[in-house]
Image 1: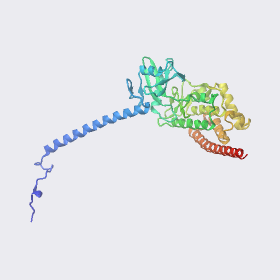
Image 2: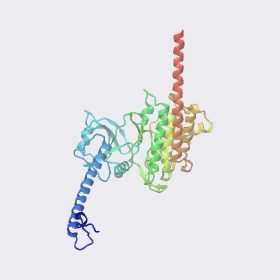
Image 3: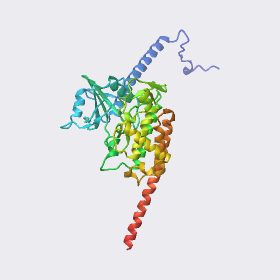
Length: 390
């Protein structure tokens, strides 16, 4: 017997049937789609605003946007007005000069938040492409050992770059200070970190980024002695090619790859050569800020003579850290540095090999230095005990 209760015979819409309510369903569907699109657009706009704000905060610390803007071409970079730049540089009664780069002078500045920054004023006589290249390169790459570019200013014929501030100046200043000595373990860590950032640049997904001006004064040190590679005004992207020939051979003569000087051939290995010279300076404590060719040749020849056994190792060790040096790590770094300064790029190690050896040296130096300090502390306690017994 068929059950004809009300609940079973109530009509159910079937949109396949001509007598059901297709018009009503269509209207409902359109309204639902419209609401969904509105919500999507609203959420997208909010997400974009959040992304922009986050990018600005991450690139500028606590700095707030006033008259400038975030440039869409260079993601995360803040476009300062000239007025903001001048106010930042002139925060004190006099301008504080920090140094000079490949294309301009660098001053200390203070943002409205109180954050210290370094502001480079690009020389008007410098290459027009230097400013654009530095902004373009540093807006694309981020690494713990690369100086961070916060923003730029290109207004009324003046160009400025605003960087993070490194409290301990450059490596040349720290190495040559008369009131303090750069410890051996710190020197090894600086070399390892510099090798790390070069590995990052040379193996960049878009191709090898060659810095072209690796030297003591372009390695900045933070308050905690963390090295930051700076001054990308001469940097070149080699894309996927091994070599490029340039008519404008630029860099600092005492650190430049001989092949690059002679044949204008720029390769990733050109930075390896410069790194080798820097390593030899850190090992020897050579009191020359920027080497010329004569000083460079004297330094590299002496290093090669030590490695070949023609001269004693002691002659190459910086006397200020002689008691702290871990000899096996010193020798390891010296041998790698000598390979780096080979006159031909064919004989030089890859940046991967350089980093691995520097990392090995740092790990061993860290362990041995800790053990040495513990032994010295124990000996000191023993001496005190003897004195007390007497």
